Length: 424
Image (cartoon, rainbow, N blue to C red):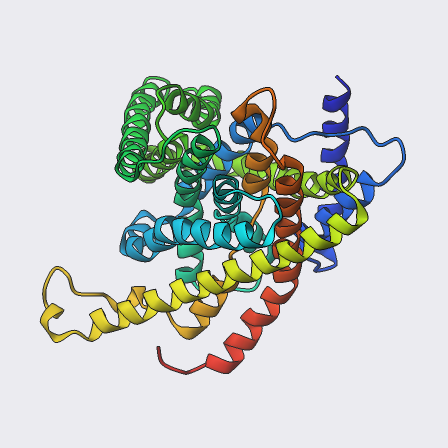
């Protein structure tokens, strides 16, 4: 009961701080993280442990649903190549790159544990990036790519994490089994999301004259979809995203205006509270982790976390610019002109977009939740070096959200001034 009381108090504090930060034109995520750190160091402050299962069920479904509902499906499809490269290829490349750094720099780190840490730090959190850049007038292309990436990359990271954990427990890694599992997760998640969307559509038509029932079903659907998909060992992430796309399309043609407006208000409130609570919880975790390690270890592992952050940024920047060059070559390729494979100019990534997308690779609550869930995944004895992994993850999240977050608005503004009027 104490934890529930603390959460309610934190929600109240979050609402007040968020409003003040917005009025003062400060970045809400950064202010909330510092507020959480400050609260965590207050003597007698009750400990709020992040339970990974609760995080995945409470935070992931509504935030994924809201993002997929709002993102234009046509824009998502048009940029699917770039989004897939960031959400799938980049996740696995980042996992491998960070695993190599971790293995050679962290004493006692084995290859399986290194890949566990790499998989934890691989997925980005577009919620943080888009919250920080709110009001900076990002291009619709940057926003679509960042949101689209966040809809898929969690599924990729969870697959990489699952096989890394299997390696820790002594299972043999077989690459084609991993590939088959990934395909099954994606296909199964899509099927579950599609079927629930169809069923929900039937229910909404049955109760079309009862607004309260319709809104209640829409609010409950993402959670049910996620649970059903996970129950059948498919991707809850992809299932919820599929549901969001389907409901978005249905709403355009079937939802009355008053239902659209009320639904939008409810989801804006839900995502506002969850996003704010995420950042304040990240801050609260830092004092808890600090107590588990010595002063020398804190400095050493903080330095390694900084190097891992830099490595992830370099890999991400390389991937973004490779995709930019690939699209430009395809756009100018004479044999593709007038064919179904022709690249439209609207999907070309400008230098300004490349800079913003590269610098927006922030880590967030998903990475922290996976790290916190390590003892539950492996067994009673937990994961070797789990405190080290959790601390490094926490520091990386803080560096990316606070460090990159403070610089990102400047990069956006400087890029607008530098590339104004320039071509692609």
